[in-house]
Image 1 (tube, rainbow, N blue to C red):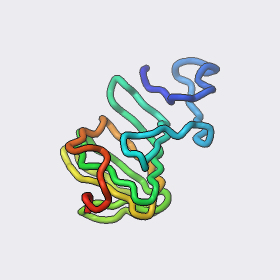
Image 2 (cartoon, rainbow, N blue to C red):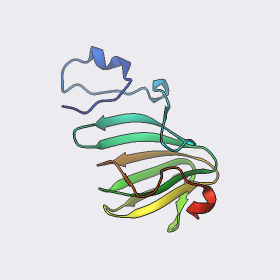
Image 3 (cartoon, rainbow, N blue to C red):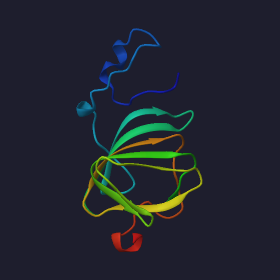
Length: 135
């Protein structure tokens, strides 16, 4: 199995390949992303398939440049809101996007988002954009 949780200290003490992985999310480090106002904690990743589940922290004014979803993307907004030209997804709401869809996303007020990817996004433009350009 190639799926792991990076930075999971307890991984060394697992009782076999089929053991459950309990993740202390607070103990994981925030990692930078190509967008300077967005950071992430990787909860699960499989480099062989591109599968990834991650917690994303969007600072107020964060923008993610235009990108294509190679496979289905799912996002559950835990705090704040993210938006694009199709709508706004606020805390407690869920949005998913079909494979092949494209958009630029932004968070004028900031957000905490749990996102699940079956494959990495393909960036059409720079992942870093201005808030005005994304509107």
